[in-house]
Amino acid sequence: MDAAVGGSGAGRSRGLEAALRSGRFVVTAEITPPDSADPAAVLERVGALGDSVDAINVTDGAGARAHMSALACAAILAREGVDPVLQVTARDRNRIALQGDLIGAAALGIRNILCLRGDDPETGDQPEAKPVFDVDSRGLIAMARTLGEGKFPSGRPIDPPPRLFIGAADAPCADDGDWKPDGLIAKIEAGAGFIQTQYCFDLAVLRRYIARLRDHGITGRAFVLVGVGPIVSAHSARWMNANLFGVQVPDGLIARVEAAADQGAEGWRICAEMLEELHQIEGVAGVHIMAPRQQHNVPRMLEDSGILAKRRASA
Image (cartoon, rainbow, N blue to C red; front, side, top):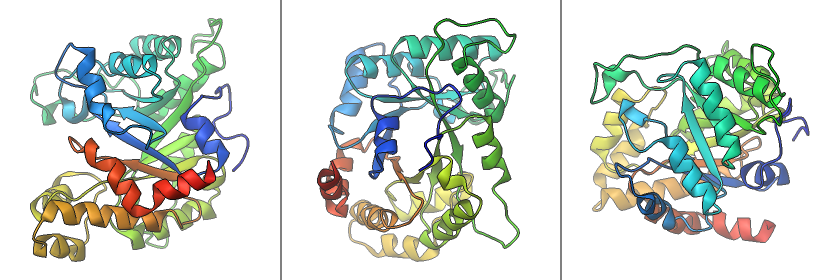
């Protein structure tokens, strides 16, 4: 991996970035902040993950629904020695507020930032909320990079600057022969050093996607973490196909889950099989596991896939 990954002012984090730069297969997971003002509720959500993951994403108003502040939740994790990935959306704050939060995150020991557009408020439970979108996700990445270089976009200095490891999101797509990852290249040029993708359930699509990223030099410039997760049921798989942008669960997998006596258990088996395959694909730096309200199953699934044993061997 290119030593310049995450450069342009980005500092070395003690967790995620160091793990990625070491070359070993990295695992991140994800939690949604609780509907609670109790820090213990945050720790309860991550407790089951133990040391099976390198970092934990904290979502920022996922589904356009309010929860405990993502920044506060990430700060609680950092205080407890867990390396958080703070998801920051452009939906709710203008550039002034976003800049303040990014600097504040660094001051609280939060170095990993995943820059996202954010879900539209009309999709949430308070559809009358006004969206901001003062910048888009690429603009947010560039802004974080500028802050890390020691200045505000206005040119005013920051001393010391925030040392951020900046991430971006992408959705694996099928290669139609003419497709170019122009959007992802633009995010990397803006300052992204790691990529976390949307769920991917189709390994054939994923292999073509990663091959195209390799062809364009992306896997040498940024670390790519592929999004995976369990299929809870055949009904859930069909819902994801209809409602989640960039997600396509193949008909064969849906049929396999539907035929199982325990659809949830079969979904976890499929996820473990995918992890084993992803570990072998050149250019895949790791996986990002999204398993809402099922974090307690993640360590066992990693064990079943053989990933934990391989990580121990490379430690």
